[in-house]
Amino acid sequence: MTTVFTLSQLGWSAFFQQQLSLEECTVQVPARIVAQHRSCIDVLSEQGPKRLMYGLDIPASACALTIGDWLLLNPDGSFCRMLERRSCFSRKAAGTKVAEQLIAANVDTVFVVTALNHDFSLNRIERYLALIREAGADAVAVLTKADLCDDPAAYQCQVQALDPLLVVETVNGLDTASVSALQPWCRAGSTVALLGSSGVGKSTLINTLTGQTAQLTAEARVADDKGRHTTTSRTLHLMDGGGILLDTPGMRELQLADCETGVQETFADITELVKRCRYSDCQHQSEPGCAVIEALQAEQIDGRRLANYLSLMREQTHNTASLAEKRARDRSKSRYYRSVQTAARLRKKGR
Image (cartoon, rainbow, N blue to C red; front, top):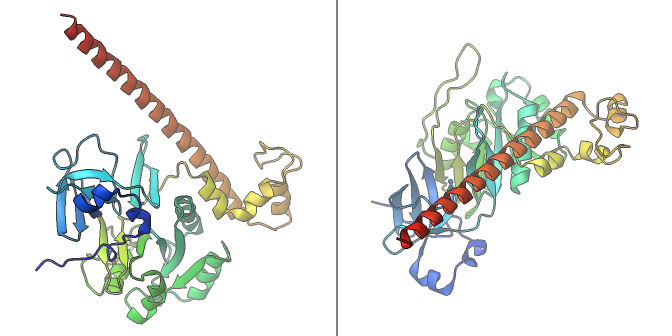
């Protein structure tokens, strides 16, 4: 028997409702993307689940879609349009390819999942926080595998030092009582995303939060304590408490682009020092009057943190410029193709 969900259970809110015209309210059907595959997407509406095929149900001219998006469907179930996003997560595509890859949309809170083992990385946590803050969502640092760690409190203090306002929770993903600390962010109608590298325990955490074993899990490799990559597609999970949980495949490479504000907010202490530098184009290396270097020498900021800030700023600046150049080339090609098509039509009419 197919379970039927209300729009509010799927995360519908006034933000989306106000985007509909009176006609759309009576004719079109709101549906949310709950799974994304190479050639199709799965959506859920009050009428139940449906699979839409690219090129068949969804026209090639439609804008890029991602999991969490809200769509309007025609009465026959075909794609009508996508609603404006409340938040959107993206990254530069992995490798040397110059392209933007959408990760998720319309997320309220993101659990930054990190295992308390040799894979623990403050640099990676800061990278995720920059992405989340650029998207405008709330972040919660979730430190997993606490039962396998000798001193979880020491790790928690390291993460808390990144931002005194950041919520940091240490959990054992297999223990329901431990994971219950995350319930305040999993209330009815809220959408929570899990971000983290492969093997940090996201699938185990999902199983505990949802009370089921819908996600496959795998034992960590004994040699290096790193887990196997077990999630291969983006999926939404409806939790018993009413919240919606989004899982993404573990990302070994997360390149930032169009993320200057997110980086600056994540490194707010350094950003404030940058404003006090003598030169507006200071590179914070050896320039006279550099407030950042002075703070470093006075041990007011951490050397690792400064190095990561400079690295992420350089990365997002380079990737943003690369994507902007690609968009400009694509627009130029589109204008050229349209001019060729127009000329062909005019020649045809002149015959």
